[in-house]
Image (tube, rainbow, N blue to C red; front, side):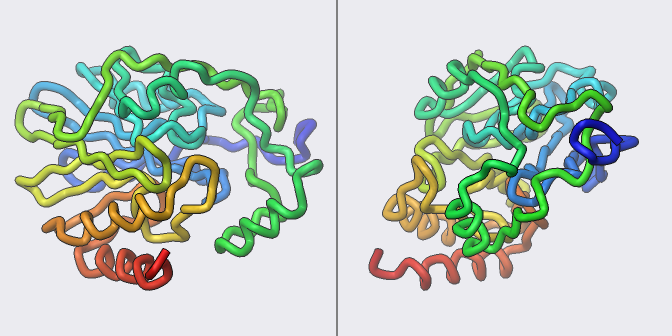
Amino acid sequence: MNACNLPVADEWFVRTRVDDAVTLLTEPHVHPLLRCNIWHVHGAGRDLLVDTGLGIASLHAAAVDLFEADLIAVATHAHTDHVGGLHEFGSRAIHAAEAETARSISGVLHLDLANADPAAIEQMAGWGYDIAGGLLTAVPRADFELDGVPRIPAPPTQILVEGDVIDLGDRAFEVLHLPGHSPGSIGLWDAANQLLFSGDAVYDGPLLDEIEGADIEAYVATMERLRELPVATVHGGHDESMDRRRFRGVIDAYLARRAGA
């Protein structure tokens, strides 16, 4: 044990091979609220990394074998659980609306709930996230402090806007601007393979549209747009991947909940 009274994890990241090109990396000891899906896509000419996790352990060191090729790391948005490890990669891209947030990251990451606002914890429970037991079930190293993790700026080397294309050589991803969860949330759409990396715009879990920076009206418009996308597979920013039927079911449930918003 350590100062946090949590066990030290043998491995912080777990990887799952999805198919010949796509690998999923996750941080299983992080609460689902902050457990971001990290997607690596191998391309013929370049690789793609979609989001980089919480940043409390080195993603690059844990999966260095995946990152040997030329690679671009794309953040679907600038929330801490998605850009924590972004600074570790030389080519970094994010939407224009969130570029300044990525540049100006500062302070430390607070994971200790001892002094957390009870109202905030209650609100998260209302969303479907019970965090009363803590945000971690283990720590990445023996000297880890819950409130001592520095947040490191990740100035983008490429600014993304709607319609930009990230070309991997044998497949291409179109940038879709999907505001609502945050102003600069994006998805990456591979039309040829009917594959969408959707970030936190839509995933198979509680969708957060009442947090700082969220916009319910914009979220509704995003969902209406996404519903018409001819997807076969959706890899979200959290939780399990979805097929078209489940994807549309999640969208329809959201739109029904926010009807008239």
